[in-house]
Structures are given as C-alpha cells and as structure tokens.
Length: 354
Image (cartoon, rainbow, N blue to C red; front, side):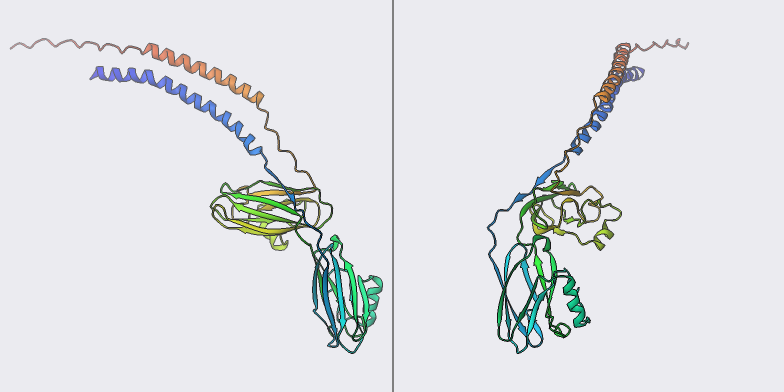
C-alpha cells in the first residue's frame, strides 16, 4: 500500500511542474491578445456615396383655375426645385383675381385675419415670386423656377384683391427636393454594428441634396437606420429617446429581421457637416450600434494601432524570467523525484512461543 502511494507521489512530482509551466504560458499569452484587440476595434469601414447620373428634368405644367367662390382650384401645388415650372392661370369667374406667390417660406405666414392694407404692406416688404392679375375669362401663362435653397419649403399664394384672401382664396405651393443625386448602401449585423460604420457624401455643389439609401440586414435581429437631423451633434445613450422625440430624424428606416432583408428610402440633407446615425432598438445603440455620415467633409483616417513595442518588450522580459524559473523548477523537481523511494522494510515480529 505504501509503495503504491509513493509511486503516485512520484507521478505528481513529474506532472505538476510542467502543468505550472503551461499555466504560466497561457497567462502570458493573455496580455498579448488583449493588446492585439484594440487594433481590430480601431478599424473603420467607410462607405462612399455614388453619384446618380440623370438627364435634366423637363418642364412642369401646372394648371390653376381662379374662381369666384372665391378660391383657387387646386389650392395646393407641388414642383421640384431647379425645374422650369409653367403656371397656366385661368380665370373662370366674372371678377378680377390675382395669383400672388409669397417669397417667405411657411404655410401660414399670411393671416386671413389681416386687413387688405396689411396684406399689401406685407408684399411691399417682401417682393412676391409671382404677382399677376387675371381678368375674367382670361388665361395667363407664368414661367418660374425655384432655387435649390428653396426646396423642402412651403410658400403661400393668395389673391390680393381686397377681401378675397380673407374669404378663402389662398393656397400652398410645396417645393420638393427633386430626384435623388446619390446612392448610399448600409448593412446591419448581429454583432450590433453598422457595416460600414461611416458614410460619406462628397463634392456636393448645392443643398439640399437627396441621397437614396439602401439598408440590408446581414443577420437575424431587427434594427433601425435613424439619422440625426442636426449636423455636428453627438447623440448620447442617455438622451437619444428624448432627442428624436423633439427632433424629427432625417430618415428612420425599420430594418426587418432576417438575413437578406432590405429596406430603402430617400435621405434629404440640408447642409454640410457630420450627421450621426443609430439603431433605436433598445440596447443596440448602447452596445455600439452607431455611425457617422460625413457630408462634404472627408472622414477622418482610422486611428493608428496602439504602439506596443515598449510594453511588449517588458512583457517579453517578464515572460522570459518567469518561464526560466518555471523550467528550472520543473527540471529540479522532476530530477529529484525521478525514482520513487524504496519502502522501508518493516522488521518482523519475533515468533511467539507456543
């Protein structure tokens, strides 16, 4: 029995030192891996927009009837910016009317409670875009074009004949942004990140500009692609819910779950700057699901990998010392315990006399 225990101690003496060496090697490998990790996190993927070539749009013809109701028919018009617009103004009544288009953006800048004098004073202070009088039974053709800076705004048109505006002869003209000028592609992942995590729209010559964005889900989780309307503003995990409650996003696309699911939409950008985009699904933004859209600003280069030459030198020195000590101990213990000790003979008891 004692011999068996001795052999077991001898086996432990051979195995344990080498186990210690292995543990030390694993422990020293850990810091090396931890220093390599920041390099991977520092890599930034950038997606650059591609310009959409297209022919110049043709003219837009908008017929408008001026009636004795008094009213405009229709009382709402829409045309894109940078397009030649032709208004065909036909007076279908028996009274004179005017078509006076305000140059001040807004859906309710002119108030129907104003007196005719106040309306006249407003247009003296703010020269209208269009101001024509149309006699009964006549048709007047007006050509105009809205500048890109006027896009995405509403402009009122009224009749300034006394009390016609006050009686309801008014309408709203909406200037749209036109067709998309750029293509953007984005992907979402189950690692709760955007790929790429930076987008760039460069060489924009005028604003606002419209970009067509396509977002593809590469994983199984659902996400959103939600872009801040404020340039050069950093959203925080603590305030993003209240921020988007009070600031309508430039675009917020729900990305369906399932690999290969795709959603698309138009993103209207009003000016240069850096716009942050995030995922609104609870927990995703906090886990790092965000990115930045650079407009007419080159994305910054990815941060360089941290220099670990000095630190790795120290690590190698310490590793060499510990490994040397561990090897010496392992050899020493192995040599000392190479042969199990012979069991000490037990003296026999003298035979008892019979």
